[in-house]
Image (cartoon, rainbow, N blue to C red):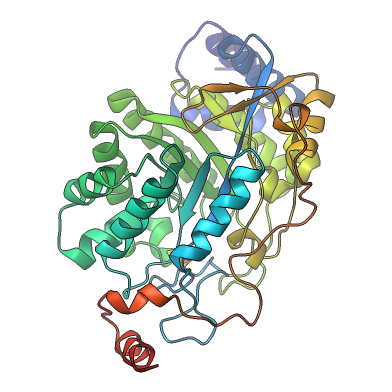
Length: 404
Ligand code: SF4
C-alpha cells in the first residue's frame, strides 16, 4: 500500500499490521506522520484536554543484582554507594508530595536480595495506615518477578499479597523492548523475559489492577523489533484492557556499560506517532519530557501524546544516565497551554481531578529535582534489622547494625 492508502486505512479505523506500521514509520513524511497521529489523538480526545499527574518518583533502593548493561543507576550488593530508604524517609517524601498537591508515589527500585517480601508488605501497610487515601503505583513487573523468586511464591500470589496491603497499580517499567533477542543483548533477559513481563501484567489486570506500559528504545533493537514490542502490548490490551497508558523513553547512554549515543528528537517523535497509530486500543500516550526535555515534550502533543506525565519532584534513574530535566506544575501547565490545550490534573487511573493546584492555592516552586538520598548520607534505616538478608554482605551488615 502507498502512504496515502495507509493513511486512509487509519482514518477509516482500520488496524495496521507490522509491515504497514513499518512502512509508515520509515517512509511517511514527518509532517504527514505527525498529522495522522494527531488526528487519531483528536478522535480519542476531542476536547483538547491534556492531562498530567502530581506524584513523586521514589527509588527505594539502588542495590540490584540484575546488572542491566543500559543502567547507570544500580549499585552491586555490598557497594558503599548502595542504599535502602527507611520508612521515615519515605514518609517525609510523601509529606512533601502532599504539600505540592500530589496524591501518589511511583515506587520502584533495584532487585535487592536483602529486602524480602515482608519488607514491602510492612512498608505498604504503614503508608496506607498513615495516609489512607494516598496511592501506591509500585513495583514494575521485573520487581514482582524478583519477589516471586525470592519468596518462592507464584506471581499471582505476590500480586494478591501486595494488593492486600495497599498496592493500587503497577508501573510499566522494565519492559525495555519485549523481544528476547534484545533482552539478552541488554543483559535483562534473566531479570524478566518478554513473556514474564507480559504475564505479570496479565495477572495484575486479572486481579483488577490497572497498569501502564513503557518502551525503552534506542539501544540495539531494530525498528521491526520496536514494532514487535508495540504489537505484543496491543495483543495483551485486546485480551485484558488493563493498560491505562503507553510511555516511550529513549535510552540514556551516559555512565552506562553499554554506552553509545542517544536517539534524536525526530526519532522520538516518529516512534511516538507510530505508537499512536499502532496502539489503537490504548487511550493515553504520555509525552516523555523527562528524557526529551520540555521542548520536544511539548511537541509530542502534536505527534499523538495527550498526557504530559508527571510533575517531576524527584528523579534518580534517568539523571544517573545524564539527563536531568525538571518541570514543576507551573512549567507543565505553561507548556500545555502554549501548545493550545487545556491542562487538567489526573490520577493514575486517568480520572480527571481538576484545575492546576497552583491556581487554587500557593505551592512551593520546584526548580530543581530532589534526590533519593543526599550525597554522603550512608545512614541505615532502623527497621532494616527486622528483615532477613540473603546475601553474605547483607547478612554481615545486618549483624553490625544490630550490634550498634
Ligand atoms: S534497570 Fe533496574 S533491574 Fe536493571 S540494573 Fe537497573 S535497577 Fe537493576
